[in-house]
Image (cartoon, rainbow, N blue to C red; front, side):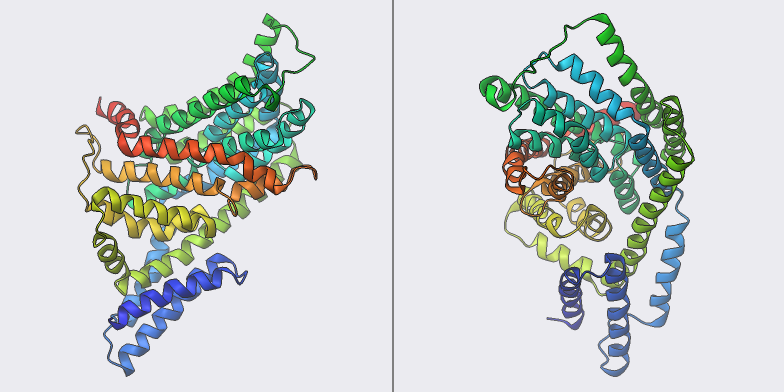
Length: 462
């Protein structure tokens, strides 16, 4: 084994080890990158190891960080974060919850359907998993408990619906993935529409079927109001404003009227206007949303800088080549290698947030996938259909990982706002059927890539 390979393996081992120390991940990434850069530099001087990490190469790290800060695509991140947080404070989701509960309250499992539909709308308007899970938990869990829903059924619905934000556009994860793989944000947004809706539809079918065959898990409410025009009008008044905002943001991107960065500004302005329309906008709310947006954006960009240092040193040491050779040498065939990569990403989802996986792991794995022979049709429109499809698979895999016990992130987001009588084991049991449904959706997308690729080819091909 060559010295460079030893350093690459040592970098990964050090990274995993420092994850459990409680040191902020940005410092871990940047610190390990600098440390092994120094080791490579001095080993070349005193041991003649030829790692290639001289001062000129290390100086490129600074240039890479400056180029990262000049990337206009990433301006969309704070805007979309602000949009999601402002909608959280605007009372839009709360109004939708109350109105849609009246609409679906006559259907067994109707409250579960309401939560899932609101989860889809929140995913398309915020893209922030933690905010969606917590908001759905605070709004819907007390109502579900009053209606005598099964604890496992209720918590499973909330966690699964809240995790849709990782996939359904305008997901901030897709913005970062597009930047890291030099893909079009519009391509990823359009490619994610049908997989996200497919997953939401599968959830709805399961909720209806489970409530029908097991009436005890989702009893009908005793105080059901008749479905009247005033009820329908109330539902429309609650749904139409956020839907118009979603169409304004995504529609402007899909129609080519605005870039994702410009559309994020539309979303931020629209969310502020919705808050004002709901009479929820005041200085305290505005200041709180601005500060939360600032902190979240700073957290993401700190990881960006640390990951840039880490990945640059890793690549200079030949880490990307080592990973590529290891994966392509597996005796499983092209689809076997793909499944092995998805399993690795799934397991990493237990230890890392999607930001670290997107910034560190995805750029290393994408060239491996691009070099394999998959029969994926870009319809003559998409430049890199395999990578667009691969990003959708990664998003679904991470979504599954965040739901999977014992350390799925969504489980602990919900546990933090649950009543004391709901145990963590209740949440674990509740998410298992939805994990299986997500694995079903992932399998379908592997077999039928056109589910993700057809829509962008139609929108950008005409």
